[in-house]
Length: 153
Picture 1 (cartoon, rainbow, N blue to C red):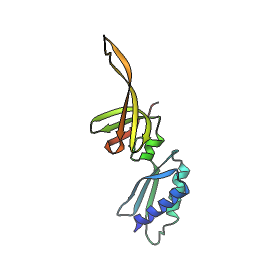
Picture 2: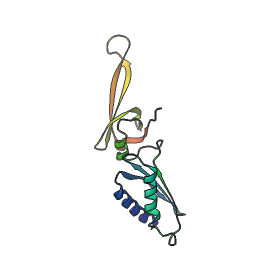
Picture 3: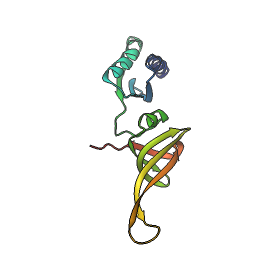
Picture 4: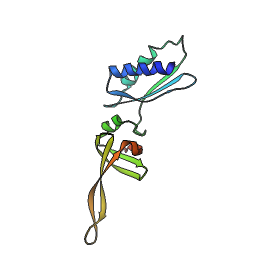
């Protein structure tokens, strides 16, 4: 089956460059292969070319006609894997869980959990006015409905 052959070729490509990993693989009924990859240090055009060549040069068009797209995960796409969280430590995330939305700096990733920190203004415990406090949330990855990096300019 075409999908299995592509999965095996991707595995070989990731063994050759172990900083890369698969985000999504789609093979439709017309043999259009769509691959989205990410990398611990980002993804270069040359990384996409290398993965594309690994697949294209090892599949026989005489045997099966196909089209192929290899792309890197875009900055607007949600984070889906623990490795993506790890590479974004220090960046600001917008995270949606069943309880609501949290925005903060990703400070730690460990054991299928992430830790976000942010500053908030709250009423003073005594007297009038507000005080700035640092908040922290530890969120299990399986409870995250969506997490995106907030891009600031």
